[in-house]
Image (cartoon, rainbow, N blue to C red):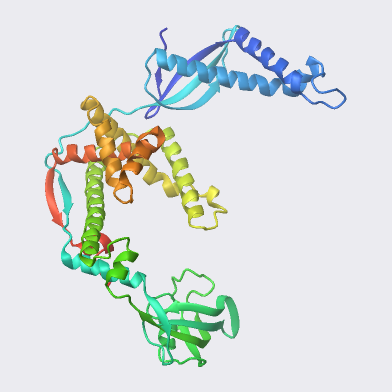
Length: 441
């Protein structure tokens, strides 16, 4: 059937649906009969209310539901028959001017997909991040692992940086205690920046059972608005001092890291392999992000609003889920304004459409094959003791495997784009990749 498509603003299009009233009435009658069998209306036994009552209580809403359902089904049937490129159905509107009593005409407003032109990107620079793991980086990682396994022994001396102390404290501003300013038996490590600098410095040199008043100035941009920009005086009592003791790098230490033999050389080789894998993952991610940035900055088009709205909804759901996983209060998160996520959502949708167009131009060759998906799973599985079992667990389930299909797709995209742009290698150190340039030891 021929259908007239009207171009509206941007990607919006409109078609008019003609729905037969006879079909609408027949479906309304059918649903009213079903409603009659389960309706509970005062004065009548369940399922025994007369049809006139059912029509009075439910007729209007059922007719609206039937109109909406019929319009949606008709719209997508026509879209399939006419091969319309539907990015999303936005709205259904009953036309004011109805010129045929046998039908009801409804305007379907939808968005089509944009036309995307991939320009020549051969003169665009993309930084390909490269990094190597050295023996010094392994030793540095060993020190980090030692610190993670530090133990504390009680000592009778003045407290110093690196000690774990247990304190009682009460803070007041202008003589009045404030929320969060009081605690008992509070443990933390001096020099860890857990507390305000003046607070920690004030404890250095104190002995057990000693009390001291320490003045602390909260900065204007402090996260606690009630105390931001104010000066608090804390009465601190030091109750315990414990000195940190790092474990020796020996067979016992190696065994705590899962090296059954206890061989230190084997432990370091395993550490080098593990951090090498993590470094590769990170530098590959940086390179991929650089490629995506070039695509986003050099290919512009209108993005379907419906797809952006759907992506915003997903981002909100992800935010709530992340907060829940961290054990944080999620009250009020459902009211987060869309504007917080809009730019990110637009970028995500745009990049998805660009990748789709690149795949179309390559006749589907950008999409990963089974071997590429398995390779992506295998790379991830190396983090586990039984990688083969992990690989099979992911590969045998379509939903679980889809996560790595996306990873493999991104890998294919990187390989493709590195052949289309000017590649400039950017060497980075282990500390830059892993810790943003700040050494952890």
